[in-house]
Image (cartoon, rainbow, N blue to C red; front, top):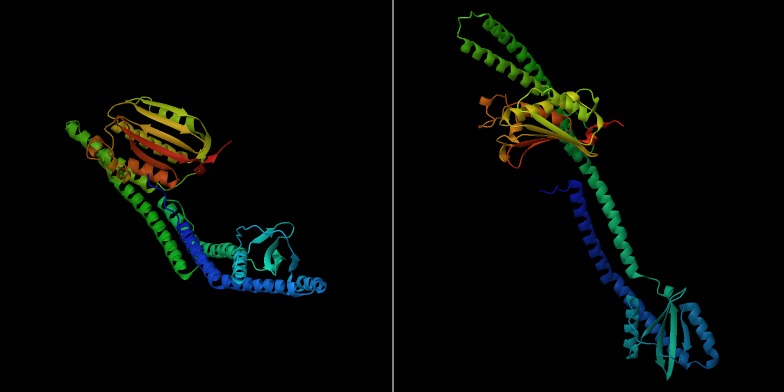
Amino acid sequence: MLSTPLSLFTRTGIALAISMTVFILFSVSVVIYFVLAPVANRAADDLASLMVLSAQTWVELPPSTRPDFEQALIDDYQLTLSNSTEAIPISKNPMPYLRFLRNALEKRMQLPIPILVMSGETTWFSVDIPMADQNIRISFPRERIGAQPPLASLLVLIGGTIIILLASLLFVRRLTGPLANLSQAAARLGSGMELKPLPETGPRELVTLTHSFNQMVIQIAELMENRTTILAGISHDLRTPITRMRLVLELLHDDVDTSLKNKLVQDLDEMNELITHSLELAHGQVTHELEEINVQEFIDGIILSYRDNEPSISWKHLGNCICKVDTLALRRILTNLIDNALSYGDGKPVEVHCDCTDSNIVIQVLDRGIGIPVEEQIAVFRPFHRLEQSRSRATGGSGLGLAIAKQLADSHGWNIKLLSREGGGTEAELSIPMEKLTLVN
């Protein structure tokens, strides 16, 4: 089963999202490597120099002046200094700035300098600097560092991605929206539905395309109307001489060859039927007012009209619903499908099934005839298309019954298809989505 292709909007959105994300990741990496990391490394190096200098100064100061020096460090540099007897355990620090600071201290002291992280209402960092046989502990709060490169990079990445993606999707939506409307309008036009002119707005190319489409819709509507008028005129012009010819045949003397007379009458009837079906095909896209029906009872009435028919027709249903539907179109489709099954069912009983669910109504007409080859199951819906075997003109039919049924179904948004049955025969299935119906509670 073929998967449904992604829409132009989805494809473009995914492409933009991937490209923008890659671009922002690259930009953030460049900024971190060439800007933030060098700045952080320089700041850590300056702080390491200040710590070592402060420890040296504190050791050299007289004990009486040390408190003033410690207070000055707190006021000016947010550093606390004290004499510690307990060594800081060696641990790993995930923050890049702390790694830069530790490397700078170790470079100056030529020995491992661990950093202690103390969490609380305010996070503090402490380092021990050996100086003059003393262990000088210098601490500073988290806000002393100030910059947070990882968080800043993450915020830039997330914020930039969201802003650029939303702006890009809005831009793409403005471009693909009119194209989507054109696609939907083309689908409705192909189904024979009446269309209103599309708004001619947007970029110049889309305005030109929409204008051309609107002109095409007008021309097609005029062609369809002209076709119906021409066919109606041809029908009138042909039926008048056909009627006269039939009247003449009826008035012929009894000594005329009866078989020849009957053959001519049959040919005239066939011509009249062909004209009728051609007109039905021309009017197939005309919709009528909806009528409220009980689907089961409606099909019951159609089946009842075939009560004297041979072969017999059996029918069953699952579920039931009451809805408003174009009864003329539904009746014509079902009678065409049933007539087709009776004509080409090889004299075997025909089955009619109806399943009414919450999502759709599915009506099936099944026969046990010779069947339709898979490669022909779409082509037989074309006007005047007939198969070469049992469904040829020799067995009767104008080649328009299925075409009329297909056109009526398409014009109402219904689905009709032919399938091969296991064991031989054909299954004609009419599916009516509930969104195409007016349900009655």
